[in-house]
Image (tube, rainbow, N blue to C red; front, side, top):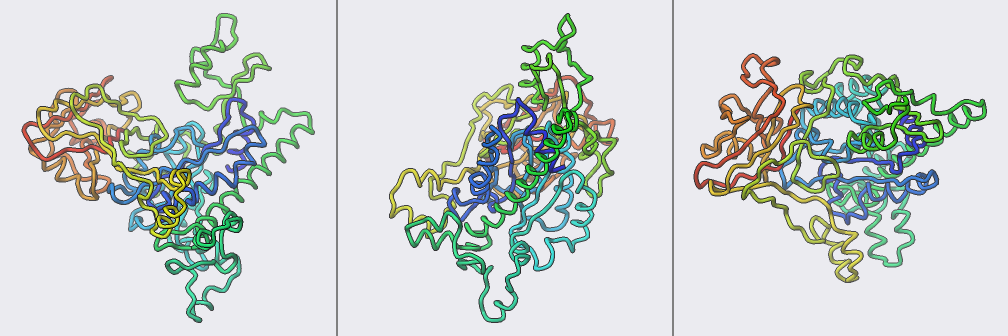
Length: 509
């Protein structure tokens, strides 16, 4: 799967960017460090030259989010196509300190939903800690996921496990009173700073870059371990793909035939003479976000990735191990609108009528979630460029109203892609706002196509930040009275002066 991903990117003349999209917690966001020192930023700097040599840009999207907004892996996986670009080549997932029982459901859902995205991205799981002899592989649930979804590219990397595998005797050092994984420890037993730290003239900055763990968050040197691991694996994937491409070319074969097939679905793109109309084709690619190959040199040859590497159709995928088949065995990933920042993708639900509901975003300065030592250092430097490099991207947000004078907020749900009928709303800001803000709020009326939804049928799901407004269409749930229609309009209206309602996410499936 890794080789396939790299080969299809390299052979696609329409693909100028190779995208890695990360969702995760404050670890993924890089908190207690400068954003510049996060593993995603390091990975982009380390690996960019390889893709540049192929005429491509490497883009590593960091949609990590701090805990203050109340998010967990449980709700954020539903927003994968808004949090990161829908056409990402690889998905990264990192929620180390949030995964307490049942996390395998969210990860499996993400793996399966990824196979319904245009590039069918692999999911790679970054664990901030790890054990001496295994990257959480001693967990039965993790082993089951590994064995079932390895063919789809699923893999995991643990920072501490990787360091142990280098051969350094951390256990002996522990007996001698040296804890390399302790807070603010400089040096991992192999190096005392990062590679770019070795070039740093400021001694304080150089030493700070050698921190393995700031606290529970990795430091720059800890993040370099993660960045280098991914960079090594992806570089090997590129090399192996190039070897196969070269082998085909030496044999006089078209290397595209190994990874692409001619499309049998013209989607109305054929002109009257039987050729593909170039304008219509390009419009289709842009609007549908479909991974297609248009080769002008072969008379409008239209190719698409082979589906047999491995099968991506729902019926051909393994039966779910942990996730609810009603939600994770579907032909489309969930649709979502997420008002938190950053997002790189496309919102599914759209606002039809906003009235006086206000879109709000937390305004953070450059020092937000940057470690105290780095704040002091960069204040001393007083360099505007470094203030920008340090600034973290994540911020809480929502669309809000506090009384009936603000009018009705109406979302149009993507009805054509809703196969199950699941509707979820999440609130801001806090980990347990879902019940009080939505379910117990007598001043909040929620309607679907003009019909008031029965709150007794709603529940807190998939975490306490959110409320499940509709579990499924009635064809899947005998207790439901909601039918699928061509148009689905979801509205929120405050009856009287009330506590503020602030919607951070709206999810439809």
